[in-house]
Amino acid sequence: MLLTECYQKLATWLCSANDRASRAYLEAHLDLLVGEFEQFLELFIGVYSDSPNEQQRLRNMQLLLKDANARGGTQQAVRDAYVNVFGGLILDLPIWLQDLEQLPLDIFSACWTDRLVAIHKIRLRDAINVALANKQIAPAIVAELQYQLGNLFFYNSPKHSTSVLKTVVNYYQASLQVYVPEHYPLQFEKVQVALDGAYKNKR
Image (cartoon, rainbow, N blue to C red; front, top):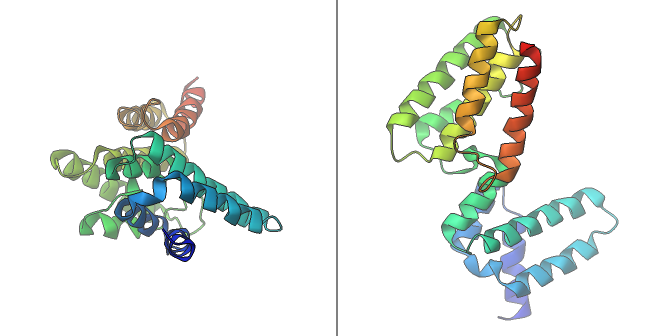
């Protein structure tokens, strides 16, 4: 492959508009997983030595390439590598879940009224039930919704009663049925930290 073609393909992936677009592009261009692209990416990283944030972003992208390659270099391997970093909602979502994704997710924001929290809990719970009944919805998507609902109960409850904490733990544990350490170590660690926090509040 010509150097300019290599550069253009790699640059298009690195400059994708969002993480989901980045994932889709890599799935469609699995040749980016071969060694020459990883070496070329190392040159990109060197160019940004005076920009630590950009350099770190590029290193994260490099780790994605390595992980997808280690998982087999297939489209599914790319999806799994992205889920490991970004969570299940990085996958393609049906329209009804895209609408849910547009709800504000900053659980510490002052705009979260009791009514908004209640509505979001109901919508997330309903979405989980529908997704569980739909075999076409990837389990990782359900796992991320369960994790988010656990967070919503934990961080937006006026007090952590035994009942609330049981609900929180149940949602986190359900998420861990999919986010297993062997397949999604970063997501497992994320949920495990949250679960440990919930257990500490139960004491």
